[in-house]
Image (tube, rainbow, N blue to C red):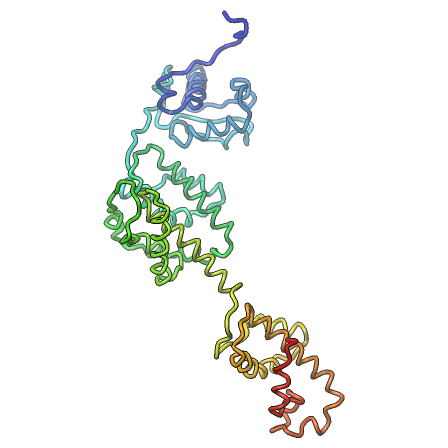
Length: 387
């Protein structure tokens, strides 16, 4: 015997390791040995015993392997994931008696393509909930997940695991992008109005991987998913040419063009929506321009009369339309102008008297706009480039 081998060795089946993975086979063999020695259909092992049996792994690694066994349906964890509880409590799904041979613990699931009416298991939805993913959001991702899986055309025995990862990644993306919050709510609401012909809609033609064609169009499913996310239908159509041109120039070969298109449009829509609120592109002022309500809130906090500000809008728009100049934020420009005119009104308050109202048409107008009655005064005021 080799001098380094002084303790009990772990034995596992090479065939089992080839089927489910080496690490999973080691842990499953050991758990099966414990179950065989103890008898029964449910077993309790202290965390320290787990660490002693697997001293070559830390707690995080042991937790990961146990989770993989659970996801593959080879092990049912009754207690929280190791080491969150003092004991590891487990059983083998659909087995009341365990064999001495690890390969008899459970027959490995056969790899199958994505089925047209596939649904995630209750355990998968529960795991997503434990990861702070709402059940409604999980089911809202089902259509996109099935489209992607059917386009790939691969056979798997872990569709629930793939669904869990897909939904979790989508949730992280949604949470990281605050501008998509409204779209997420609309997307979830859209799930409640799904058309009954869902089975027919998922009759997707599987294609071999290849470059995108010049005549490529997104599928009806992809467009409906984007529209349920609150994205304008015309915006989706306008995104097709640039999407096709980009991938034609790259020359990459894929068979999941619809999935890539969904991701592309979502990203572009988020940027577009954000740019509407915070545009960095200078624009001309429109004929019907009006300041946003936030402007009035800011003026109110500065103790500036809102009616005074509204009376300045018409001449403000007229001047900047005639000047044909560009600005990135007309709201900021308007705030500067109103604050300046308000300060001038306060400064002129002691000098107005009767002559300040000489050209006024009414007492109210003269009071709200002192010194503004004549065309010359108005021109002088608007020509001031300080604002």
